[in-house]
Amino acid sequence: MDTVEVVASLLVVVIIIVSLLSNVLVLICFLYSPEIRKQAPGLFILNLTFCNLLLTVSNMPLTLVGLINKGNPGGEGFCHAVGFLDTFLTTNSMLSMAALSIDRWIAVVFPLSYSSKMRHRDAALVLGYSWVHSISFSTVAACFSWVGYHHLYASCTLCNTRANSIRTQFGIFTVVFHSLTFFLSLVVLCVTYLKVLKVARFHCKRIDIITMQTLMLLVDIHPSVRQRCLEEQKRRRQRATRKISTFIGTFVVCFAPYVITRMVELFPAVPISHHWGVVSKCLAYSKAACDPFVYSLLRLQYRKTCSDIINRLLKRSSLNASGHRGGGNDRNHPPQTAQ
Image (cartoon, rainbow, N blue to C red):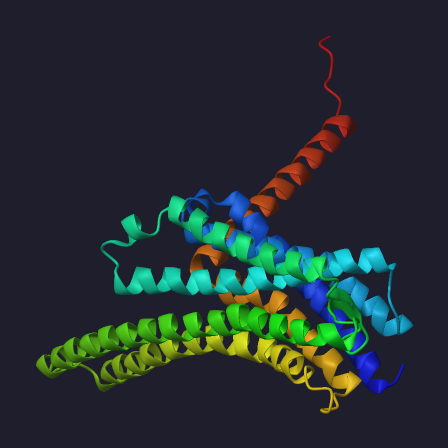
């Protein structure tokens, strides 16, 4: 193994550990908090978490083995099954992120009618489409034997090893597949989140106007208080932009290099480095480790749930410890019998 492969292998190990721990923590919060479970977007979070967990325990370790052994980590049939999972889980994850962006758009743009527009039944219908979409493309790829071990990415994924007469069909499938998954999800994310940002900036502007009018009326206000109010206005504007940039930016940074490489791969005359193929696959895997923080763990509701879980565990452990100490004291000082 050369230096790049060693670094890529270590990166995959780190991604597996972070993804596994963070997604399990999201799942624990979902099961622990009834408030999270009763919200419709919780279904999207749950679906995304399951996809990330399955991808972490099924595909990532095999990619690590492929990097170390420089070959197929299993038999042909086993690799076909893993390639089917890779296609299905990646597609389902992208569509889940698009569904979350639609949910945020409805919540911000139509706050009064949100509860009637996004119910659990509506969320289930959206997830149903996501599953049908993902299974359809994965099944087509499996039926045409377009999944297998790909040396460029050192993983079991979409791969065409058929004759040149089939290469055109595989190229059409690849273009349609990525257009209706990555590019469609990206368009949905950009349109919805930019509208959310527009509404957020409008509300921030209204709050800023009210704040400035209040500051003008309070002539006796201390300069430090006025300065803090102005700084809070600036932070409020930056907070909305930072959140939207995180949602769209992580999606593009993690998935775009891999998808673009798959498109360029359709042109045999264009050489692609094996190292770049592995790096692009690692970037796609890293989205599974980023999603729990981007969509869940950094939110106030999940942070509060994590704090409640930790406090409950610490309280239980302290009670157990005090119980053990009490039992030890009873053994050391047995009760005296009456004379």
